[in-house]
Amino acid sequence: MTRIRLYPSGKEVDVQAGDTVLESLERSGYALSNNCRAGACGECKVKVREGEFDQGMVLDMALSQEERTEGYGLMCMAKPLSEVVEIDWGTADAQPKLFPPRENVRCVVVDRIERTPRITELRIRPVGEALRYWPGQYVSITDIQRTIPARSYSIANAPRNDGEIVLQITRVPDGKTSNWIHDQVHVGSMVNLSGPYGTFIGDPATDAPVLCLAAGTGLAPILALTDAALRRGFNKPVHLMFSSQTEADIYSRGLLELWNLRHRRFKFIPTLTREEKEGVLHGRIPAVLPEQYKDLSGHAIYIAGSPEFVNDCIAAVKQLGARDEMIHTEGFFDQAPPEVPAGERLMGS
Ligand code: FES
Figure 1 (cartoon, rainbow, N blue to C red):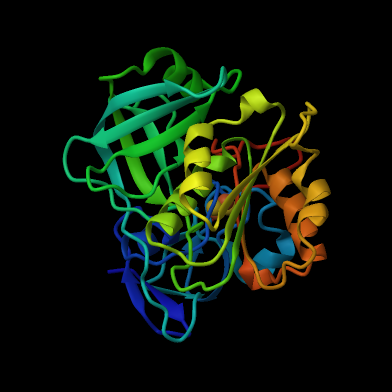
Figure 2: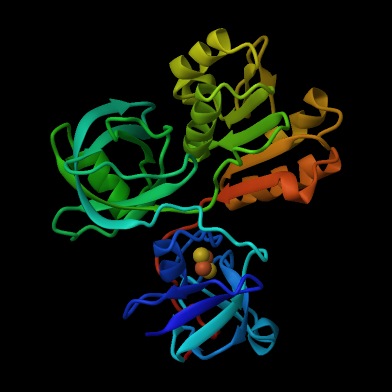
């Protein structure tokens, strides 16, 4: 059987026929960073120390020629060819910490709430056993017949005993899946979920004050992380800054106000980019951050939103002293498989 060996721990993971390196690691509970799962973002890049693999089709912008020459690969698309593929991953005592993803879990939509004119919220429960996940992870959704392209959405709630999963879905013009959800998925509909995926998860061992920065439906994984931290009685300040165009675009407001009142250490800080309101911050988060925080060197930072938002926030928090190892990010890339742009060279086997 083909195996993946992790260096330096020497731990080994079996590969099932047809699985990528990423899928194999996830089945065994190892948290390799990933985002697009389609060879487009570069998030799952690791150095391959030994063995042969089929890299599949990936974009040059995600894996440059130099990196390929130096032995790096994108594990979301890489399929082992030799008996052993050894990759640089983790520490000498690398421990599994993710729940293995499950595929095609049949679920029922038990509630649906229109959060804003563009964002609808689905509350979904598996027909069988609950999906186990860490707050901050995401699932992919499609119809039962799997005729709609599967698309990934962050889970917006901490795990519950009844297995309910909350997804907040923005309608994207021309987005087949989001339009299917908005127009055809109703209370009582059956849907097909796979997951959980992703490594944007909280560190239960952290003892630092937490600052969460979110824009758009980047709020979803931040809600799940915050929900979990508050429920377990995290005893350091948890601040959540949310950027929206107008006050009407602030969704999940009721929950955020409840947390404001219930938890002394929690603070919700909205900022509006296209509307001025008395008593509410005005401007993008990177611009207003220095007014709110003078020194972030001791903070754990969680950032979720578009890749541009994430990058701008990283630069802003670093200006205020935030340390690399304390910054956790989730940027939402297009989940579509990479197309072949003219002149773009794709990696073969
Ligand atoms: S390139 Fe592998 S997760 Fe994006």
